[in-house]
Length: 571
Image (cartoon, rainbow, N blue to C red; front, top):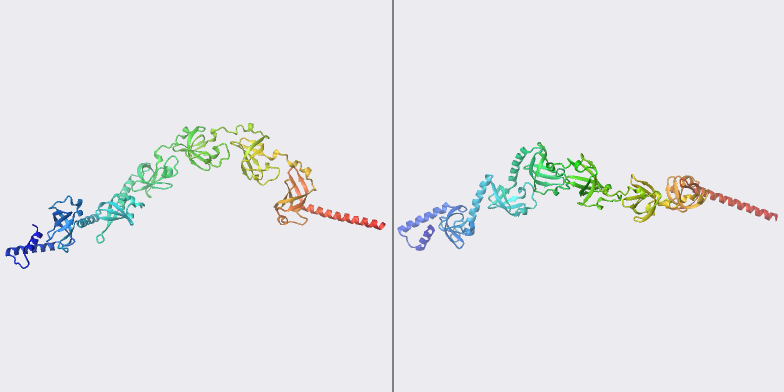
């Protein structure tokens, strides 16, 4: 029978008024002394040793030597108390020595927490490493289970900031306690501290091993447009995009992803600045070493389009070797606006090696050479003076380009479009129209054909001298004003120059003050130069002639009047 049960029995057997026998009184006094000493031996808030005296109805009854036992729910024990037996000794926390019903209040859960806290304090003081499981995302960091709930700040999770913290939930990490507050029950952890220590240790070892031209393993740490940074073990090295492959690399992400493991070569190591330049392509042989043997000039090749630019396309002959097909070497046709109109990325094409520069690592290719050159027998197909028909492909300020056949274009210069003077070819021609022309000249070496349209009609200047002679008066329209005079259009599209000295009998210093474009004028032809196809006009001479005509008419009128007077006097 326990001490508490003995006391209870004594209390049940005797009323307060009854007197105890001498023996019972001695036993009673000893029991009171024992419980009084026990009560002073333990204080509330302590962890004490107890004994399991009963397991029933999900509750463990624990005797700690007090006048009453304590009851603790089995869920506070490991495995819900299934491994416990009567008589087992357990550590419990004394919350209160007596509740309203006179029972002692105990807690196994609090005992565990206090014991664990003390253990963590010891580990914190000893700077020991602990393990914890990430259980939730918290404001500014993560909540970690280390037996007790602890906080891992975002800045202490890794060496670099981590954006998605939720992906770490469930992960188990090694950490170190950096702060504890017992009053608030706060525990702050750091994983970064361990990583920094590890990195520092690795850095020292790596620096001792680094040598130029040596191979070293690393992990992709960061990817940029110009290259990737590789963690070599405490120190980062840069693998530039130009040192990744002998072939074309548009962006490092085409070859690498974050966390990739790779072996690279140390190209350069600056011990003072601790900068490391790395290379990957240098591990494999340079494909350009025997390129002249594999791709001699005039050799026909097959390759894949890997890049398209405004000036041409790059063709991959093999990994690390590319050749350029300039836009002018893509087709015999001269009107390719952009290479993308002919080929697309990843297209396979046939070409011919035109030039090879092994030192500069350049190969020029030609695609049009795979087809027959339409200019080879051009002089046999298009004779000078022959009439030919073509399609207007393009109009420019200086003329019109006519496609005679695929790869053969001719130019009609603006001066050969009409016997009349025109400002722009669009005045008489339209794109995609068919036009009949005459072959004026063929330059086979430069692949040029000169064509003419006006030559299909007789030159009107052959009859100019007959139709327009010096002294003839004409009516025209001012079409252009310059500092030295003005041009007037008259007749059937002819133009004549009115020099500044021929604008008026008065001195004119600024033609644009005397005339305006579109103004109708009367002038006299004062010169016709058929050989140079020029006509000179004069407003001044026209006006002077009018004055002379008026004077002559007045004189004739006066003479006629005098004759009439004389006849009347005679009569």
